[in-house]
Amino acid sequence: MKVDFKKLTASALSVAMLASLGGCAMFDKDDEAVLKVAEDYATAVTKIKTGDIVELLADPDDDLQENIEQFVDVDADLYGDDYAAICNAIAGTLEYSIDEESVESSKKKGEASVDITFSIADYQAAYDEVTADGGDLDAFIDAIGDADKTEIEQTIEFVLEDDTWLVDDSEAENVNEVYQFYLDAFDYSFAAAISTDLIDSVEWYYSDNGVYTDVYTIELDIIPTTEGQEVEWQFTYEYYLDGQLIYTSDECTDQGYWIESYYGTGYDAAAQLDDNGYLIAGNYECIVYDLAGNVLADETCTVVNSGAGTTVVPQGDPGDIDVIWSDGIDDYWYSYSDGSGYAMGTGDYTTDETTIEYTCQVYDEANLAYFPVYYEVYYSATGDANDAEFIYSATITPSEYTNGYFYEFQYVENDGLDEGSYFFIGAPDESGSVILFNVEATVS
Image (cartoon, rainbow, N blue to C red; front, side, top):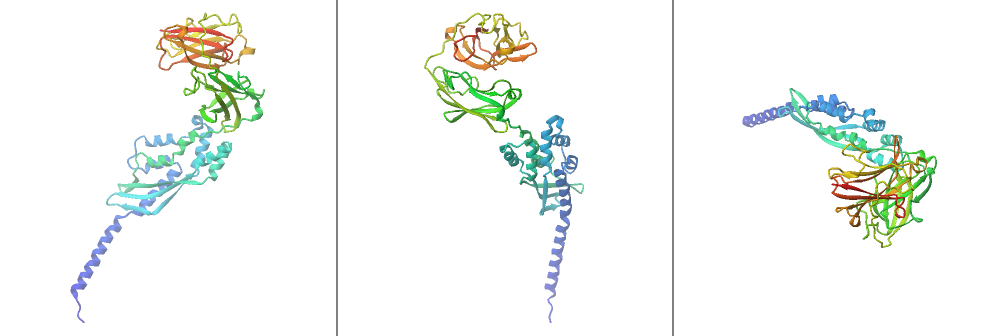
């Protein structure tokens, strides 16, 4: 048998070359070492071990560990017991899995990567469900433990430094993504529901059985029971005009004989007005909610317009206040800018000031400490009351200070007051049938 030595030699050389090439690739890989570092890193992230995380990062920023520690801080003295409880509950659901088949590594290039999936309780869904049911913090903590998981998939990059694999994430951006719940938890709050047993009645303040005529402001009042007057009411409310939502309040806090929900030109810059500046006619529905989302009141009033215009009451003596309060009641102008306070008795202001305030002291605290007073502000650039234009209205109750109760009738222009005259007119209600005061402040 004739042997072809040339073919055998060529085959042997080919096998040797393949073995050599395969050996180079095999020795270049370092998958097991990369997976070990990935395991340590994922464990540190899920256990919130900030020091271990930073030690596994390549070229971390000098203050990175301090920043991460501040980010995950749940000090109850700083942020409250609820925040700490929420964050700790969510953190307790953190888990991870490493896709070992995804690992790629090259010692020659000094680069590697692997896919890690972090899972965490779907805390937002749990919060939405609990608050929809009026649940409290304890119910939320329980729901977190039973919640479905959401996944955060990340490809973690590594670099080789001094024969050690480190995570290539010097600013810990991947960590921040996993720890997003520390920020989200600030938005979670729980308020105990307010029992409707604390409500004695509900009424539209100063209306004619729920009908208002030529008004700038309407007001739905919850009248609490004696027990309810001692409760601090926290609530929000909505106003609808002929079935369309027109106003949503911020969170409100109130206490006492009336729990007030206002709507009008002093509260909504987009309020729809007729030609005379009154709220347009229609059916206005007010729905009041406690912070747990339960309805405390849902009432509708009717606004009608007579077509009559508004007339500015001629200027009177700033010290001449109707005897419906008291002949000797203390009243004065107050300044917020020059430090003179009570000494600002002339009603003179400058354009660099932002607030005009006419203040009156309550003389009969037993009967008038919570008595609401409606007032309007008119402005005239010329100082002539006859051409003054309506610019603001509100209804207020007295503020309590150590030396008594005081009505603080204010007008504010954040960009500075305009030159001219500002007329303040007060009345027990919006009918204007009785004038409590009619005073003028001058800005120059």
